[in-house]
Length: 173
Picture 1 (cartoon, one colour):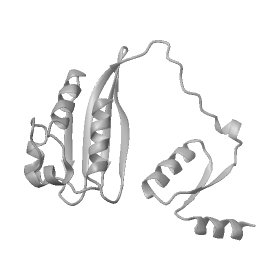
Picture 2 (cartoon, helix red, strand yellow):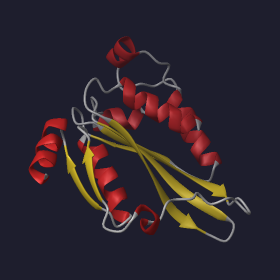
Picture 3 (cartoon, one colour):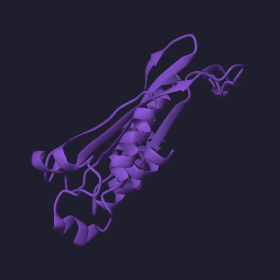
Picture 4 (cartoon, helix red, strand yellow):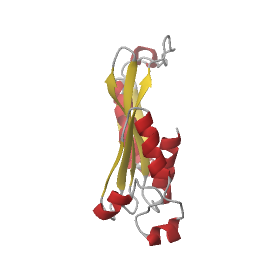
């Protein structure tokens, strides 16, 4: 949790406008363990190749202007990398200055025996042929929710404004 919170708060801190989002992927499953990769994407200031080389060193930041502008001690990423390694994982970054960053870490967790599985409504319960109009201004959120709805075999249409939704609904009547 500490690693995730550090990466997410850094993404928010270094992104004045745009977006920060998280993706979790199941990487590997054995009889006793599961490995996950956690990714935090941001559309913030990005980091040069030279700056990326310094990121995971203790008390190191990209440059002194970063410390003056954003604060911090330069310990968060170094400690987070150690935590990831303690969980049989690793940590890394992909970034381009001015275009945002992708920070990721992987970790291996012991499977929980007899864990209660989450319950989702099936398409049959929702009603086959059900149509959904999704309105979301954020493209990433809209696309994610659209894929989720389509997995339930729902007929889904998405728009980016309430005005477009109203036009569609009025044209449908």
